[in-house]
Length: 81
Image (cartoon, rainbow, N blue to C red; front, side, top):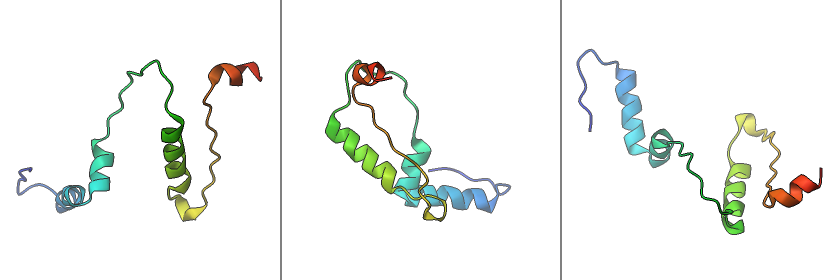
């Protein structure tokens, strides 16, 4: 809940309402970057889900210009250079 003053812009109020109603927007806006990493690899199954979400994410005019590369074994990959 938030209190609004008569001087607040209607567009700001509408944006806040959208955030409350739409759980995706709410999640995106509440996101915080945590930089405390564990010294263990991410499970392959979790990486697959993340990559599929990234590949299927919408893009401008649905061009999807990205290339996705996942490195699961840094030691093996760095020795391949």
